[in-house]
Structures are given as C-alpha cells and as structure tokens.
Amino acid sequence: MPTPMADQDVLSMRQEDLMAWMTANGHPRFRGQQLFEWLWRHHARSYDEVKVWPDGLKQETAFKLPLFRLSLVTRQAAQDRTTKLLLALKDGQRVETVLLPHRYGYSVCVSSQVGCAMGCHFCASGLNGRIRHLTAGEMADQVDFANQVLQERGSHISRIDVMGIGEPLDNFVSLTRFLEIAHDPGGLNLSYRHMTVSTSGLVPAMKKLADLGLPVTLAVSLHAPNDPLRQSLMPINRAYPLAKLIPMCRSYLEKTGRRVTFEYLLLKNVNDGESEAHQLGQLIRGFPSHVNLIPWNPVAEHPYQPSPNARVRRFQSIVHEYGISCTIRRELGQEIEAACGQLRLREEEPVSP
Ligand code: SF4
Image (cartoon, rainbow, N blue to C red; front, side, top):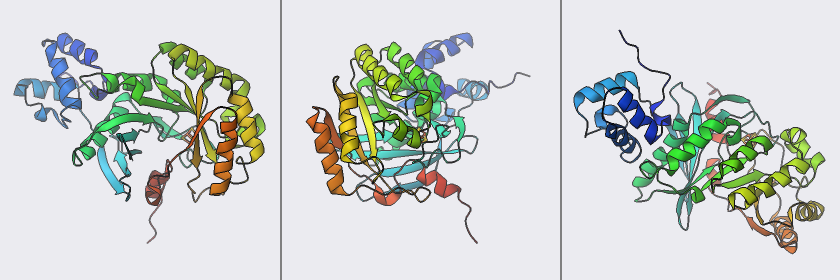
C-alpha cells in the first residue's frame, strides 16, 4: 500500500512546484495552478474546499500531500485595532502574528521560528532558546490567516514585516521560499518592495540575501553604536562586530538599491544618551539609511526602563544633525503585550490553581 508523502509540505510548495507535482502524478499541470490559487486566494482549509476539483483528485491529493493549516489559539485586539494572534502549528508549537493598522492599510508582523537562538538580552522571544525553524508554508499561512481576519474589516494585508519571533536569516531557505510565495501574483500577490526582513546582524546570510538582488527592505537591529555596548545587549556582536556589520549594510544598498533601516530600541540610561546618539550618527553617516527609534515596551522578565519622551526627542534631533532620516515608531497595541514573544510566553506559563 502506498504511503502518504508526509515530508512534502503543500503550503511550502511554490506554484511551479505544485504544477510539477501534478505532472509527476499523472495530472494536467494546470491542476497545480488551481491548487495554489485555492490555497492562497480562497483560503481553502481542506481539499474538500477546492470546488473546481473532482472528488477523486481531492482524495488522492489529500492522501499523498496532506494539508495542515494553522489554527487560532488566542486573538487579542487593542483599541487602535492592532490585533495579535497566537497560532498553533501542526506539532502543537505556537507562534505569534501581529496585524498593525497604518494610514495605508495593514501590515503583518510574521514570526520565522519558534523561539530564537540569538539570545538578545532585552527580548522575550529568546528566553527559552530556539525550538525549531518555521517552514515557508507556516510563514505564508500567518499572512493568509491575517488576511482572513481582515476580510471581516473589508481590508487585506498590504505589507509584510518578517520581524516577529525568531531570526529570519537563521532560517534562510524557508525565508526566501516564503518571500517567493508571498510575491507570486497567484498567491499572496505582494510586491517585494512591500516586504521587510529583520536581522540581528547575521552578516554571511545578509550577503546571501543581497546576492539574490530582491528589492526587499532589510531592517538591522542595531540597538547600540559601539561594540562593547552592543555586545552587552546582543551576543551576536561577538561573531559579527560593527566593523563587519556596517560595511555589509552599505553593500546591501549597492546590490539591491534598497536602503537599510536601523532599528534602535531606546533603553533608559543604557543606550539613550547624547553620547550614544552622536556615536550612532558618526557610525552610519555617509550612505543612505533610516533609523527607527523604538520606545521600550516593558517585559516582566527584563529590568530595562523606557526612555522618557524628552530623551527620545533629543536622541532623534542629534541623529538628524548627521543628515540621517530618523523616526520614532508609534507605540501600537500596548495594552495587548505587543513586544515580540510576550503572548506566547504568557500562554506557556503554568496556570496557578
Ligand atoms: S530580538 Fe530578534 S534576534 Fe534577538 S532574541 Fe529576540 S527574536 Fe531573536
């Protein structure tokens, strides 16, 4: 008796992979195109929902290529319409996905791993280390789930930020396959220019992404303008110090034509002084970039305090003095624990009797 091809993940297959699969299994190529569209345009949760298929093909494909979609564990919505989803994967692991409202529509913040190996000292996601990578399909399904939520509001996702739980470039193959599925007009149909990938600074993988030449925005989590301070916040800085990271950012711009965004979390009396602002300006001036200052959202597990507004404004004005574009990120969804990893950690805490 034949066995199902459980190692093949239908949601991680590109349109051309599905067409090739259909041909290999004795069916016309166009069946692959139909399946891709029913998965991503019509949000089919089972093969029974692929209305244009005969029953025999539904049964055969369900057997050979099982379909598992994410399921909702918890949904929290803030007054500003920021919505946080805790979603279950097929092995019971959970990931967070956040929908963020903007003037132009909605963006979705996608997780790329369960947990994270990078161990940044200010981050809730890395507290228990990396449990596993997400597949391309599990990343794409977060966007699909977000689109279904937004259907209720007559809207849809306009931008993807791979900035949720995990280090996306530590999961490079699945990440780039996800970007392809998201870009495909038969799939999620988003321009590469409307996608941002964050990184804590994995320089070799940044180079691989730059070599692909995709016009995807790269958001580098900088958080400190000198090596000793950055090392104290982000262990990855030992392997890839600023002398390697900053030239790589310049090279990314040259290869893709996309300026890099530097993310800078402001922690009171840690990295938010005038001296750090000047060091930052000196470090990154000379090539087009953008600095995004992020107010700290307190996490019970960490001792840091948010910078007072006046300090945030002063920091921004010093960065501007160096001719660098610099904005302060709006604080969205504060009352629903919008710092990455917080919802998952809370859900995993044992409930007291
Ligand atoms: S900040 Fe990002 S890279 Fe660092 S531990 Fe958290 S999820 Fe990982």
